[in-house]
Length: 123
Image 1: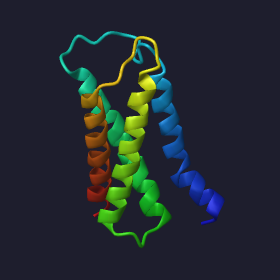
Image 2: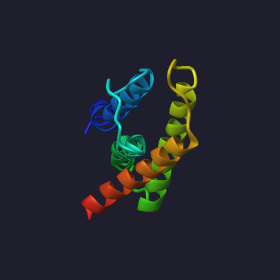
Image 3: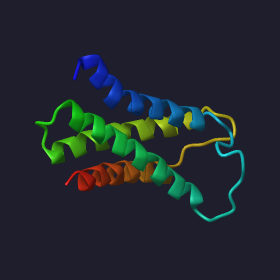
């Protein structure tokens, strides 16, 4: 597969999803509604970043199949966690939004879970 085609297939979904996360974080009410379920935002963070972790490890493993699973997971986790931190910091400048350490923790956990789901699915 050519480099451009490989990049498009592997990394454009990661970039597009990162942009979607950033855009949603820029909105005062990302879902447009207030959910009255306790801690539902934590589940949303977990699921949002699980998809991100899945896309990240897919791109990492597809870019270099020689990487061990543990190294690829660590890379995906590091990138997803860093992006989660940047996302939370970004929210500090968005009217009506604020950063929460617990959201960051669920972002990181979601990234790890998504990466692990990808690896289990590949076996």
